[in-house]
Length: 406
Image (cartoon, rainbow, N blue to C red):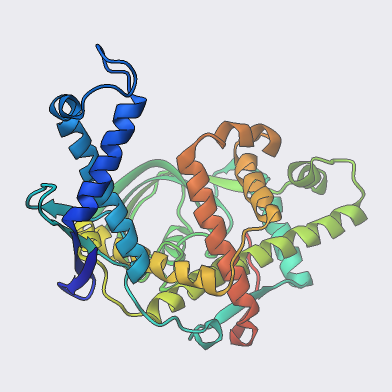
């Protein structure tokens, strides 16, 4: 059997295989004998049907089976011999198939991109560490007193930390959105500062047009740095009556009777865990951006065709996602990335908590959901890689910032 590989482009290949006629004849005769000796043919004792009868009645079916087996076996040999890393099954072309002629099979296919993997310590990335001290803990506590407090209607002018209830029509980049009876907290850490400034001192019944801009570091990147116009019709001003510590004990830890000392310790641990999660989430995004930026390579045309079928505003994200998948698959091998059982337990705990059920109840509900399980596997592998990468990038922490949770 002759195997030759031709290069149509960097990633598109053509494989031509020639299977000798004598090999085909031998394989066909073996198949014919097996059929004759193992099939029940009406009118004949087992193994006694004449060969010419079998060829007349069953020859086309046997030839079809032989062709498919030859195509698959030849392709398997080619992939193994040339170490082909395919992205999909090939297209197959055969001009003719006769036992008296050599069989020529043409396979067209694409292979995975090839690129040099950058060592993790060599990635250009600036990492951040969110820190926790007494001021951070106290501020988080004060925020929770407000968050779990009660709203009381006020006839006074709006001031910081009040809630303004209003109809608001917002225009950003010519796109208008309208909201009725929206609650807007007058806190510049949680709401757009320019909008907060425009609402302060307004009373119920007031109408006002407010021009403002979103901060450059706004969490929702769609609006970061953009200008906006808001037409506001204020219905009500509400003041926040802060919750007491007993309510926080019940809301956070379901233990209203716990001592203040136990609460303070548990709350400190709670805020520290949240800060650690924020550091990981922020650095995960930065590491993946660095990984993507450090590797340049051409994507297979079939991927590009699929991406180009999507809306234009989604094509860049899809391209980055596909490229990142190729890069990470190599890093998984390089770093021997593995998901720990504790990773799975933590993942399931967080999601089940959102649904208000236990992890033990939640898992049987999703175990048969292939899409969920595949998504969980992929996300946990990425998280495991980032965890391994961060252990190699401790010298890249360029900023330490007090944690703000709420």
